[in-house]
Amino acid sequence: MRVKLIVFDLDGTLWDHPDASTLKLPLNKIDDETIVDSEGRVLRLYPGVKKALKALYDKGIILAIASWNSWEPTYTVLNLLDIAKYFKYIVIEPHPCKHEMIGKILEMYERDFGPIEPSEVLYIDDRDIHINDIRKYVGKVRFIHMWRDVGRIEDIISLIEENYASDLQ
Image 1 (cartoon, rainbow, N blue to C red):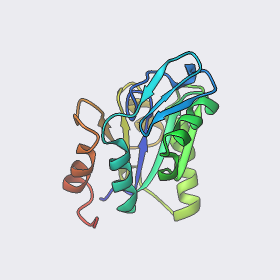
Image 2: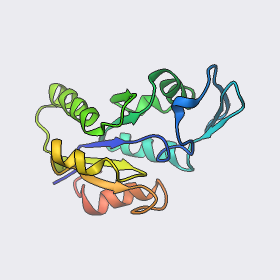
Image 3: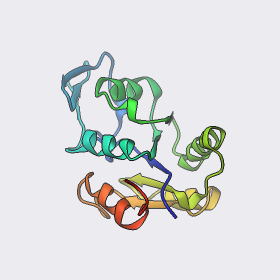
Image 4: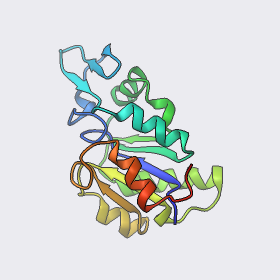
């Protein structure tokens, strides 16, 4: 069964900062992949993130975010780095219950596109602490443990093409 929806974590998965909620506004863009907060703390996208997100988006896979963070600094980062545009659904909430966030994403997906099976969802996170609850409450969502199952963000594309989506262009 092909992947229709990919849900990304943010901290430690798409960027190098461990907790975007701690960034102090205002945030300033240093370059296309780097921002700095008002106290000089830096956040960088991992190499290849923009290219990988664009490639997945261009393949017609719906992308979403489930992030345990505060909304304002995190959404500001997404916009400053010009990656918010790739995500159809962005759920950023100040609690660790990723299964609830993914549940909300699935409700929105089903409203927009119709039914989706948990096996058609791929969740990508740098930690595996949420996957048991996700599978318990949401179902058998597929999971890529970032930096363990893949070493570079670009590897996600080939992994999906080889294992989950033979019908992608």
